[in-house]
Image (cartoon, rainbow, N blue to C red; front, side, top):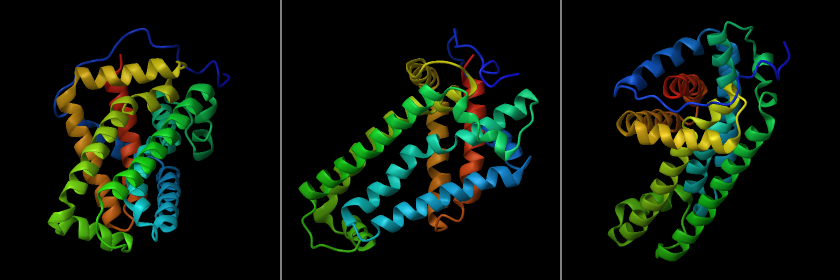
Amino acid sequence: MSQASAVSPAPTSGVRSIGFAAPLGWLARGWQDLWRQPAASLFYGVAIAVAGAVILGVTARLPYLFAAAITGFLLVAPMLAAGLYELSRRYLAGEQATLVDSMWAWRRNPSALVGFALLSILAGTAWQVASVVIVALFYKGPALAPMAMMIEVLVNPQHYLLFFVYMCVGGLLAALVFAVSVVSMPMLVDRRCDLLTALVTSVNAVAENPLPLALWATILMLLTGLGFATLLLGMIVILPWLGHASFHAYKDLVR
C-alpha cells in the first residue's frame, strides 16, 4: 500500500470529552511505546537533546536571548516529535515500525506538516523578539552573564515588574501555542487533513476539556523542567516518552 493511500481521510467529527485523570493514562501508554523499540525512540531523544544543547550553547553568552531560547525550544518541540508520533501510529495500526519507517512521517501529509513547522518557527521567533524587547524596556541592572542575570531578576525587588511582565507574556504565548498544538501535530501525522482543520480541532479539544488539558500542560511543564534540571540528559528519555504520550492524547481527544 502506498504512503498516500495509507493516510486516513480528513476528519469530519469533533472532539471527545475525557476524564480529569486521562493524562495519567497517556503517560502509561507512552511509556509502553517508548520501550517497544527503545533504540528508535531514544534516537529522537538524543537528537532533540543535542539540538537543545546547541541552542543553549549558542545563547549562553547572550543574556537577552538565553531564557527565550529555553522557552523557544519548547515551542518547536512538537514539530521535532513527528517520528515519535509515527511510531505510535504504527504500533496502534499493527504496522511495521522501525526507525527508518518513522522517518517517513513527513511524507504522509507534507504540505500541512511544513505549514505547522513554519508556524512553530514563527512562534519561536516572535518570542525571541518579544523577550529582547521586554528585557530592554524593563531591566535596569548591570549587564551580567545569563544565569547571573536570571538570579538577579528573581532576587532583586527592583526587577519584579520585569519578572511579572516576562512571565505574563511568555505564559500567554505558551498557552496559545499549547492550545493550537496539543492535538494538531499528531493529527497531521495520522490523517490527511489541512493545517487549519488540525489547529481548530486542537483548540476545540482544549475548550471541551480545560481541566484535563490543564493537568496535561502542567505535567509537560514539570517533566520538561526535570529534563533541563538534569542538564538535558533527562530529555533523552523524557521527550520520547512525552512524544508517544501526546499521540495517545490526540487519539483519545479526537473522534
